[in-house]
Amino acid sequence: MTDWSRVPVVIGAGQHTNRDEDPLTAPDPLALMALVARRAAAGAAGTAGAEKLLADLSHCWAVHSLSLRHSAPATELAERLGAGRAEARCSGMGGNIPQWLVGRAAELVGSGRRPLVLITGAEALATRRRAKKAGIRLQWPGDGGWPDTWPPLEPDLGVHPVERAAGLEQATAMYAVVQSALDHAAGRDLPAVRRSMGALMARFNEVAAANPHSWFPTRRSAEELTTVSAANRVIYHPYPKYVNAVMDVDMAAAVIVTDAQTARERGAAADDVVYLRGWADATEVWHLSARPAVGRSESLEACARSALAMAGISLDQVDAFDLYSCFPSSVEAALGALGLDAADPRPLTLTGGLPYHGGPGSNYVTHCVANTFDWLRAGHGDHALVHGNGYYLTKQAVGIYSRHAPGEPPRADDTLQSRLDRAAKPVAVHDSMPGPARVVAYTVPFDRQGGAQGALVLAESQAGRTVAVADDALTEQLLVEDAVGRAVVLEAGEGPNLAR
Image (cartoon, rainbow, N blue to C red; front, side, top):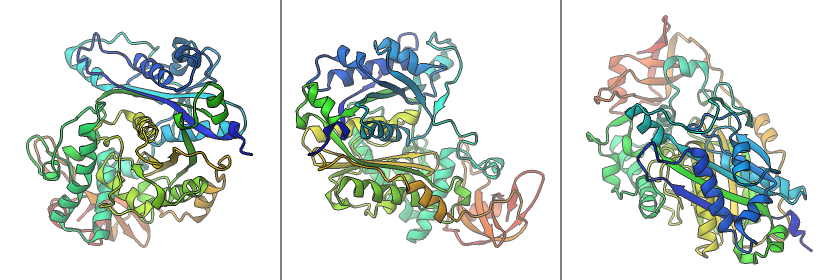
């Protein structure tokens, strides 16, 4: 007989997008979290009431919020919800975090603890931006500090000192560098890059346009997304604005996880809940510049295999995906890791993507889980895969959600990370590496007036790798042709390495 007390389920989900543009009346992140938590509790079928469910929470986990200056946000949230007995914790940072938290909740279920876990997060960076522009000091809750996080924040936030010294630290730059490696491997020239990128991101934009919670519900064609214009300037080559994640949004989402037995005891029917059949998370070789294959995520490949095996289904049985989509290269890398074609007819997102739905900091994937819960519970499919990606293809998390209960409680592979670590072969990264080298990957930053700046080049020689800034002649070449593999000469100076 199946031990239903050890089968994890999602029983409720809630979302909200704030449309109030007045900084003085717009809700703060804690108010947004409380709102969606109550929506998730109210939408949990079979419960004796939302307030009772919230009072019974065993855990209250808040996803790290960039827009909230509070040293104990989860504790205050639990108090606001009447969940004073709940263990309150604030998460670390990264787009993988919400799915990582769902995995931790599932582990509590697997241990037989009968938990009732709220996972929620919110960002109000749009309101912060408006307030700053208007000279308004927001009277939001908090003491101005930052919380102790779980897991702890990584000191370097995934950026190697050599990358940072050369100016390669913005997410847009990092993912544009990955894009160059993917385009080279696919044999694309620049027109083909535009066509491929537009076709892929138009699929996400279409979903966002139909999602009532989207920050940018505007339908745009593939050509419009990739055609450079005054409104769609290049940020980092080859990415114009319309394919970049947008973090200045006011959005919140929450999900509630428990075990199937607790859900049943609270009156939920078998088809009122969504079963978490498989989950896995792992980290890549930590720094992008040290990865042997810049455009590949071996940790995501391993997570997907592990989660699918745990769920007892094949990739062909997955009816929909919600792939992390901060930039085109994150989607393309995920497709490659999963073995999917970009033209696969199944949904690649149920949410709409960070450039179009909006990218509320580390909390985007909570929206993905909420949308997946609603999609499955509405009977649109049997199985869905949710993908979370943190930093620069660095931290990966995968969840397999299903309308159908597993035959037995799922068990995670606790050897996954150790096996990846043993197999890893990071490339040495040097502060300076003068002499001949070849281009591994690159991007070109643009200023707000549309002017190209010195290209950022990841270069390799027999000694290892470094990051350099290209001279004008090399930068011009990188803007018009695939230069991966090109021979360059590196020169050391007082600042970053120079590539010519």
